[in-house]
Length: 185
Image 1: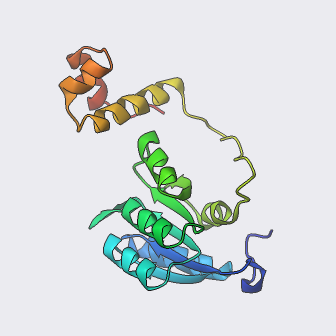
Image 2 (image 1 turned 90 degrees about the vertical axis):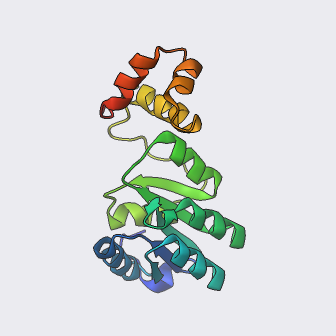
């Protein structure tokens, strides 16, 4: 498939909902997806995305994780309820393993870190569901995987440092030092 398919080359329903509160990015991605053959509808909020899904559930969706009025996963869940076969991609600037797993459980087919370009989004939307993903060029380091695990447990413990330290069998001050640092690469 070419990157810039004509509308008649997309299989079946080519409706696409894009939900993002970054207006310049939203309009740029909308235009790029229209050029690739999608019938695009744009929304800037969780409520706008859910309204669009209720009005007419699209075949495809691209949803930002963190929006001003809530979590984009609410849009993914509404889309999955309305149209279980829809293919949704979650975009985020705050990626971690826990939210990626949640997004997939709610029906997303892929999870892309911002800034994702239109080609990455397009390929995630139209990828063969039976094919395996291409191995990453730069996989996470062991330190990053450890940090992600600690962040996940911390979130599951409602950001309670003492409870997280107890569950990880770690000293509380050690955990506080890890949480205060930036994520390793």
